[in-house]
Structure formats: structure tokens, C-alpha cells
Amino acid sequence: MASEDVKTSESAVSTIVNLAEEAKLAREGVKAPSYAILSICKSLVAGGVAGGLSRTAVAPLERLKILLQVQNPHSIKYNGTVQGLKYIWRTEGFRGLFKGNGTNCARIVPNSAVKFFSYEQASKGILYLYQQQTGNEDAQLTPLLRLGAGACAGIIAMSATYPMDMVRGRLTVQTDSSPYQYRGMFHALSTVLQQEGPRALYKGWLPSVIGVIPYVGLNFAVYESLKDWLIKNKQFGFAEDSELSVTTRLACGAAAGTVGQTVAYPLDVIRRRMQMVGWKDAASVVTGDGRNKAPLEYTGMIDAFRKTVRHEGFGALYKGLVPNSVKVVPSIAIAFVTYEVVKDILGVEIRISD
Image (tube, rainbow, N blue to C red; front, side):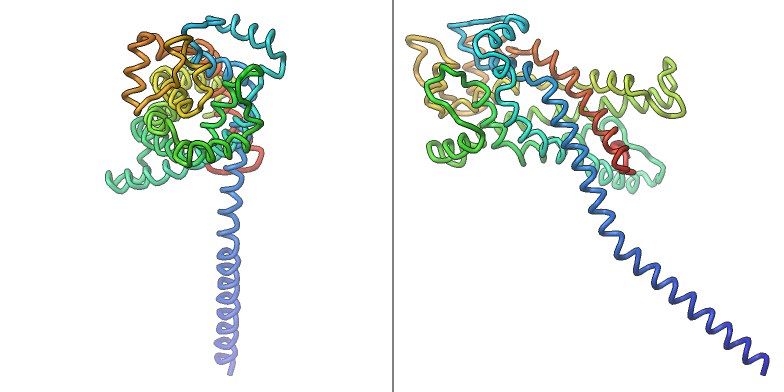
């Protein structure tokens, strides 16, 4: 009789334990998707904040860079960074320094959010495949694999937001004396669609994608590799308890930005010029007077390279490089550090280099 009571008690305990485990699994099953969605949202928010803050901080230099890239070579109003900023201030005032920044932020916030998130997901996927291939579960991403993940992220982010980048370029170029005024991003989008067709929103997409592969790829690869190198080797005393200070991370981001933008810059110039094609008032901005007053036309990326070099020399491919260098170093540095800081504040557990 006692034996039966013991068996009955054991059976009851076993049933309770099983029910408890099933309830726990059920709860985890409900929480897992919601946690994953929350983590994705936090990562996207961190990327968006990083992009908006970093671009606004250097908006005057961004505008000057684009103006120099498409400046009329026969009517040069300024040559240097300081001279150019003074000219914009004198002719358009303080607001002129930030013209196009609203559109730029409307583009860069989703672009940056998608880029950082895509990099994290691409890194995880590439790392998993690499570990499976090598049979080493402890294997880490190499600089080359980080370059590939960064390139994937850049292509996805660029393609997703390219129409906004295209109209942002036109909004940035136009001045108060331009023959035709776009009133804003949505007006520019609708005008381009009506006058030039849907394909016009992707003018310059090919050089953009080709340029974004080394640019974004090198940004992530150099930044992550530098961080890992400093932490593992404890070089120069920068790493404390396997963590880098904000200043050191800013320096890593600055180095990454310098390498990436120098390699990809000529493609950025060609992209901007191709974006002007089809805009009937672009001739007054890009081309010269007299015989060069005809509407600017390129048949493609190679043709744009050839005509730019033939008419203006090889140096034209690096127009605006100085203000861009001054801009991109703090911009990339601020973006990387802001992203990591915001992720820490939001409690996102994943790291960029996972």
C-alpha cells in the first residue's frame, strides 16, 4: 500500500514537472519571436540615429562637396573648402549651409538603419558558413570576410534608398538663382517621375553600387579589424578590460572612413554627374557657357568617366575630395560610435562583429 502511494506521488510530481516544462517552453515560444523583433527594431533605431546625427554634424561640408563635384568648370566661384563655405554663407546665409540636409537625413536614417542591420545579419550568415566550411566552431571573421559582409550591407542599403539620394543631389545643387526650384523631396520625386520617368530615379545607380562595395566594405572591415587588433594585442595601452574608449573607437572609425572614401571617391563624382542628366536646368550648374551650354548627356558610366577626364582632366574625378575628407572622417567615426552607444543604451546584446 505504501509502495503504491510512493508510485502515485512520483507520478504526480513527474506530471507537474512535465507541465511546468511545457509551460516554460510555451512561454519561450511566445517570447522568442517578440524578442527577435524587438532586437531588430532596436538595431534599426540605433543605426538610424547614428546616420542622422553623423550627417547633420557635417552637413555644410557635404553640401560643399556636391557643389564642387558638379561645379561649372568655366565659371569657378570657389576652389577651396574655406572659400567655398564662405561663399555659401555670403550668398545664401546660414540656412544655405544646411540646404538638402532634411532630404539627406530622410535618406540616410533608413539607409544607415538598413546598412548596420544588414551588416550584422550578413556577418552572422558568413561566419556560420565559414565555421561550417572550416569545421572550427570558434573561428572568427577575417578582414576579407568582413569586407564581404560590409559590401553586401552597402549594396542593400544603397539600392533601398537610392531614389532619395538621387533627388537629394539635385536639391543640394540648386540655389536661389537656379532656373527651376524643387520645393522639397516629395516635389522633386514627383517632378522627376513626371518629366523623366521612373528609371530616372536610378540614374547613377551602377557606379554607386560599384563604389559602395569598397567604401562600405572597407569601412566595416578596417573599423572592426582595428578594434580587434587593439583589443587582442593591447597595443599602445588603448584597451582596458577588453574594451576600447570612445576616443579610441572614434579614431578607428576615422581611419576606416579615410581608407574607404579615398578608394571609392571617383565613382561618387561620376554618380553625382549622372544624376544631373535629364534635368533640363543642369546645364547652368554643371557645364560651361557658349558651346558647352548644351544639356549634359552621358550614355553610361564609362562614357561619363571618359567625358569627364577628356574635358576636365583626371583631377576632376577628385573634385571636392578635401571637404569630403574633412567631412567623412568625423562622420564615419561618429556613426560607428553612436551606433554602439545607442545599442548599449537600448540594451541590444549583439555586437557588430558577431
